[in-house]
Length: 79
Image 1 (cartoon, rainbow, N blue to C red):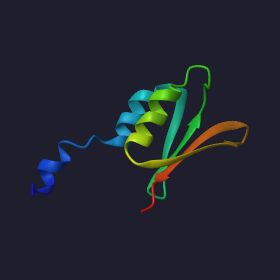
Image 2 (tube, helix red, strand yellow):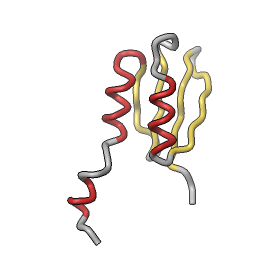
Image 3 (cartoon, rainbow, N blue to C red):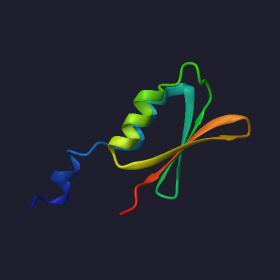
Image 4 (cartoon, helix red, strand yellow):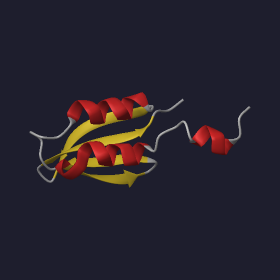
């Protein structure tokens, strides 16, 4: 089995990846081991890239409204 430091090199930092994708079109906050992403500019928001990244890394995803803005809520999938 590889040591943890070697394994970490192969798993991207999901938050940093999302920050690069979303840019100024949204805000990313960590919540309870997952993310709450507020969509500031829905027409320019990278919906596909953001959702695909979250799903690829094992997150369950919901979209809802909060203070008249769309919000993506993602939490690690259960067992």
